[in-house]
Image 1 (cartoon, rainbow, N blue to C red):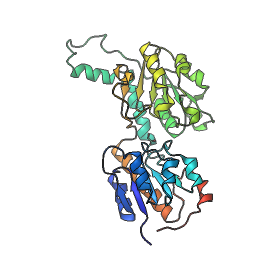
Image 2 (image 1 turned 90 degrees about the vertical axis):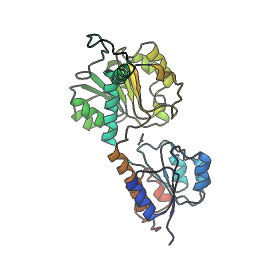
Image 3 (image 1 turned 180 degrees about the horizontal axis):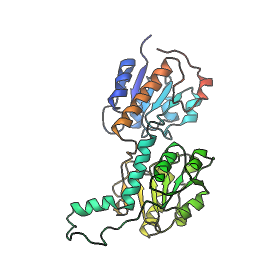
Image 4 (image 1 turned 180 degrees about the vertical axis):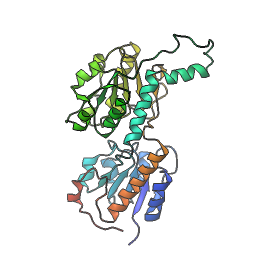
Length: 333
Ligand code: GLV
């Protein structure tokens, strides 16, 4: 049997890529920038599998061009870029890379939180730009205490929980909002509340929901109005969960104290995004899971999902199990 054909939309970390190259007839998009959609469509015409990233839009247009396509193995926990319902209709398996990135992503939420509260990025710019002209001054670059404050976690799944766990080490009061109950959060001493209550009470609001119809602009102008003037918003989930224009207004008018953002409504965010002009905003280019160890493990998981599927076994990180009724598993190697 010839090896299944896989199109890999970016150079993945070597450990995963090596397996993919050994086991499959693999073609890899070698440029740093993502392949244009028309390239993905062109390549999809003739492959059994795609290894995708969150910046690749994999929708009905791609599927319609891809009669052989059987699986999309994504390197990311989020998969809002993939039209999963359309995939199910066509018997296309979709997998992601959960869990391995939970702690790395939670660490980064904390990096943003600490950076914005204690003005780390501002302080760095202050020193480098030569503004540090007097020695120590009691009023220089004062920020907000993190320890003992109240953190509000919006979305208490794996990553939200890991953020909450870290908050216990800072002696914080932990509130959380979720659409289901989360006994593991209660065990940490966290209290489940309505979103409005969380926004009114938290000193730090940290967002950890997936992007879905229900969470699009979950944090909008009205919700931002509920937050304290001294509170900070942290988002390393998906950009469109927050209405960026409303966030800018709230920050500009001093209605909230600051924001730490790893994600944007449009990525890359345009250089003229007004949020980038604000000193009380700390930004990063969607790198929350970007540790050497985690990105390597994520790439290995992509390879494992592909290998398991083509070997006729359920891929470990299948996100659309209903697909098995449309295309039952079978050995394809
Ligand atoms: C990153 O944002 C991911 O979904 O893994």
